[in-house]
Image (cartoon, rainbow, N blue to C red; front, side, top):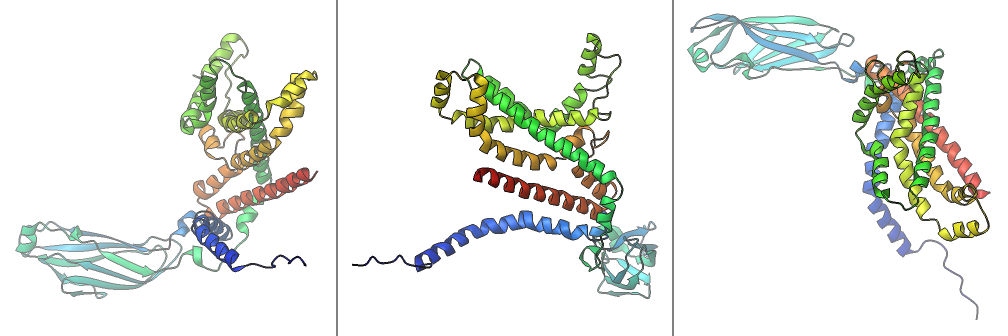
Length: 414
């Protein structure tokens, strides 16, 4: 008898299972695309557009309506005024039209030739408006007793105005000036250097302090649970609260840190910890380490407690020192979780904005790329340049991720 060869190819059952799997995954994939991919594509699109923050909204006409005069009896006259303007100072608006429902008892005596009234409905055709167009449309009206008695006003019904205009966001005009502005001069490389210092030392410091905390709490002793809770406080506390506390604590005039150093004779005059270069950058990096070491501490401690204790007992019988047990037994077992933590913390720290902004506002040499995004997009209202910086951040992190995974795969192959 000859053994039958296994079937080759995909069978109908596997095809059905594949379709079912894709069907179950499709809501998640669509959600990821809507939440992550579409905003990312929008940033890339805006980064090559010559637009400012105000250009994101298409130009539109605006109208303000009021009744000038104080008619008190039937037959009195007043002036119905519409203040019209093109809100954009750069773009025209075409085919501007307005309509408004007149209240009962109000009759237009002198109507503008561009307007008409049908069944108490006022309609006007203003044609095309130039950028920054402004005018006042005034028409004499006569009131009767019904209008006086009802207490109605012309603002009871809002005037509707519309026009045709296109936003710069959707035209086909592109530019590389945003990226040229980002890389112009030495400013970008200074900001990049600050970002790398903050990210590298903040990431390594958080891992090192987290490992130290895990080593301390890896042994059973009285009060271990309380100490674990205290170690988690920096991570779970609201960032605005802890940032304000640090700023107050290290304030050069009323901070406790300066007062203590002065009383000890360590310094002769107060130190502006968050206002002097390069001390401010060191301080925000220390804050980053202090605030985010609990995350590393939790993961490292969980991995330590899963390591078989028999190895340590055997090493101790062979005369290994505590350092040798840590270096030759613990560290190899922790390399997997340490590499994952380093990747995540590097990406998160590189993208960090709120900590630095709350502590220094990006001043005193603490301006990172994310702070630069905010300054370009909102402080300077150049949304294109801000998006260009965001694209640079994405490319930097993409290159780091590719290098990291290549390096890690090579290490695993060894």
